[in-house]
Image (cartoon, rainbow over all chains, first blue to last red; front, side, top):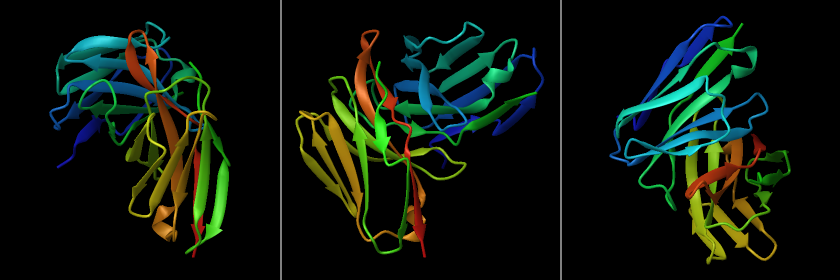
Length: 113
Length: 113
């Protein structure tokens, strides 16, 4: 059973398009995250949700809009895609917001052409 | 927030040897975590060490934490080919009233058979 799953695994799209990435966790965790990993492997948090409420919003363009319909899901919608959005996006979850390990999904490789 | 720095950026050793990776950070932390990332995969949690702990073991892994020097090390003993991966340290820091993980840029470890 996959603990944290993401779809799609690969996403190739053109500049200006709108796309969504879905994430689901079956661990019963309260907290979910979105991270962006750039080509140099630098991993940076974008958003964090706890019990469907946004608790961390790192300095991210408002073209990125996360949505958490329930505790097990955290989706990421990106409007007006730009070349610089090309990266691997990881969803993660943890039991609570602090002092717990995080479980990562397999990642979604987004390529904007 | 300050990003952790790992040293070395890349390490190549022979199977059976020990591998040591270092991490430095700049702010006060609640805990420090180490993660492994195999190529094309998500991150996997290895070990968490709290700020009041100095050393922790898990199987072939040994982690130390020196809060006075703001540094940590990860030692992998008796390395195996399967240990080939990138290793990241992550410090838990307070941000917008919530805790977040700040990742270093990782050490790329290659184990040669």
